[in-house]
Amino acid sequence: MSRPCGTWCFLERDIFIRDTQAHTVWTNEDYIAEASQIKAYRIIVAPGREGAFVLGKVTPLNYGEQVQRVKQFAIHAETVGLTFADGTELEMSCAAYSKSFHGLINTHGQIEHIHYKPRDEAELNSILRAERIIPAVRKQTPRKKKPAAR
Image 1 (cartoon, rainbow, N blue to C red):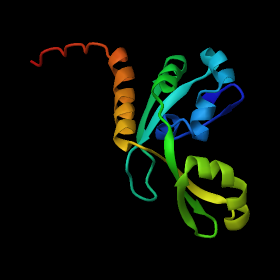
Image 2: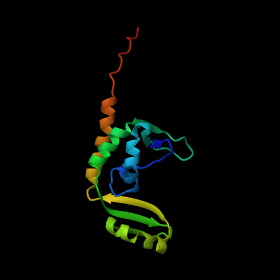
Image 3: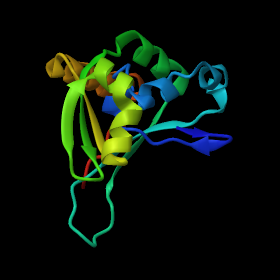
Image 4: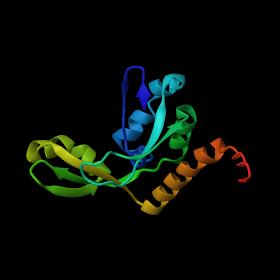
């Protein structure tokens, strides 16, 4: 999401999970109010090899339309997987994480990795598949026929 005052880059998966920072930012009412000024993109990075150029696909999104789908279809996380600076790995409910956030950081240091997990991962995958198809279908245009080779 590129805005007049900065840029956010989130995993699409996390945008569709209500309890994440990504979802909270993406669906922020201030951003929705200025949707016409926001440029949003889906970036898919192709697998590569170390030292090679980063390759992939950048697809523009209509943020105003897309954020409405996010609000409609996003699901809640059930658990959170955490990895801390001291190497500790924990999995806990979202409620427990919210209550003990500061204590966990005081005990284990900075959170190095966080992974939100919904109750039904298959449902989330289905939502993401549909999201990746819907915009592409709308923008498809018929291909021109190539002139016959002589």
